[in-house]
Image (cartoon, rainbow, N blue to C red; front, side, top):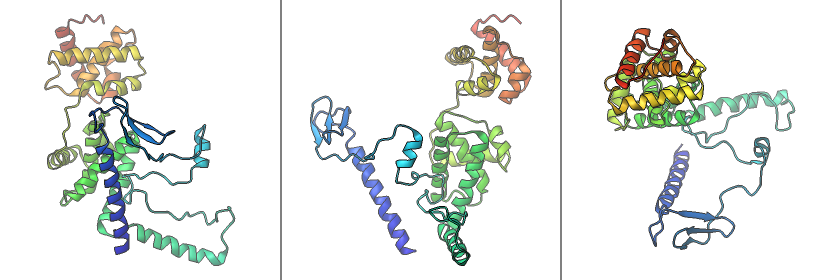
Length: 324
């Protein structure tokens, strides 16, 4: 195990050196311009403004082969999957397949099957060697399950995994359920990435209730100093419009209504989903693609009363004439 720890430490230091090198080369040392380009044909790293050659032995880290489609790219690539934070060991370890076939697709002999079974068993034990890795393995599989159910992109999953790992490093997990911290990290990641999900939506696919997710989220945000701006109603509009089958024109009109409401501070103290639902309801009527209050309420996860109150307020304050 000490050897494994040494390898991990060396890899971490190499990554840190690469990051420091990239940060140093963000601006030109001569004129301070950030317009730096890499000329792979000449092997130079130069400034576009003053022409200074910062590095004349720049190595092209890309592949030496070309691919013209995704299938060709997969066939010619000779490396594994990229490092990911959504796996407890960052995807650096290997997995022994359960197909009982060799590289050529031939069945493994009966004599070697017992040996292969033992190898698989020890492989599982080696991949998860301590309590922290067991915690991460369970938590990140739970995170992946919830993110898949919510239809979240890979970038959000990576961000949520990083938030959870920071919480583990700061020992914020003690005394709290793993599911609650995972749900809170996912909620924070959604807000950071600009694809917000409500606490109610996350609670549906989580094994903890809405109140615990909110409480854990506030605790993690405070302890990790997560700077998260309040969610704008406009962030919910594309998703709600897509679910209602509305056109891009209606979506654009709804966002315009929300921006005007924000300028007049009509959204302060109001739930963002309620304001977004009301704006979509108004825009659907103005755009000739009318949707009922019940249809919009079901998609947005609010009541019809909320939509009725918000749309009347927006129409009155913004001078929008609605013909029902």
